[in-house]
Length: 81
Ligand code: FES
Image 1: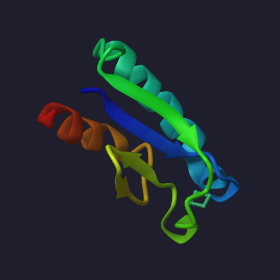
Image 2: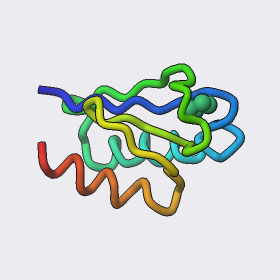
Image 3: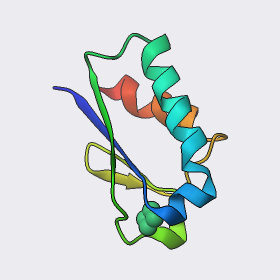
Image 4: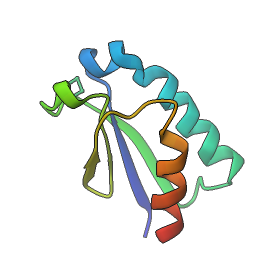
């Protein structure tokens, strides 16, 4: 089963730096050759802007995602699958 990663592309999360996180996730997938295992895409605002930027991994929402914590989150969540 593919791991689904959804990043919020809403304006609030975007202004809080989700663009950099998107690039880091893309690089991570590429560097670890996870293209076949991960479905990464964007979505609209989920209404959780106050805790943004937010991403969802297999339906579980993670908040306050930044370039500082995204890699460890990916390491933790993708290793489990
Ligand atoms: S803009 Fe991302 S949750 Fe609202």
